[in-house]
Image (cartoon, rainbow, N blue to C red; front, side, top):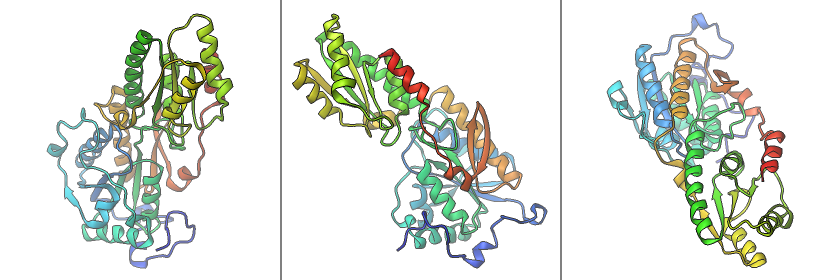
Length: 350
């Protein structure tokens, strides 16, 4: 089957298109009554807080709210159940997502998206709230192009969604990584060794850059900036050793290299004992921080406000510290990268 997500001219499904609200007088549109919420892609601390906010704010607005288990995979399979305020009680402080998440190859096809839209019709759902990253937004956009109203909430620890300054889970993931790196520095200083620590960030180095600054790392390697091993890693470590330093920390984003390979290169070149540590999915777990709980809650409210105001197919964002929203097509066309000044400041502290 052809992939739907990257196509600009999609087939119009007439009976579904009747639900599309583009270029329609809002006064002529029937109000939203039943909505569903799902989490998609990698889990992130704060997703439960976002679900809770959508459910509570939704019920308070007079909506019936349903939860979809296992993301888009569960949507096209009809894994849908009603959620009440009681169902989201005691979820605010929990990491992960109680609705669970999954990758769905089926939903990445025209037929799979159509199955999802049909299932929304089968449950009489008027709108879908999707919590996830760019890939999840593309799935939501595919449904929107078939006439199903959607709202996206940014949930990913990588903070790499272009339309927003901040994504749910980012703060907690950074604090988890920082705590682990602090502990590793303690043991590195006891054994005169170099710790090479790999953090998440396949295409974005936000976590690596910020925890590197926060933990005083000797070198920070991120996918946005090409690096020379001899100049940007080896020379810095050797200069430190020659000045009497006894331990070193190198932070590497997973998209910039392998901690195991880099540690071996350092030890082979310097004979300084070097140990790799891959934090991996540890960064996804744990109770969400105050910032993630608060941001997720406010974004959930904004999603419900969009539905109440008949502003459909929107992405919830944080810009300049304020919660707002943009059109989903516009949001997915935006670009984002780490500011050059942030990279330069990190170098000045190395």
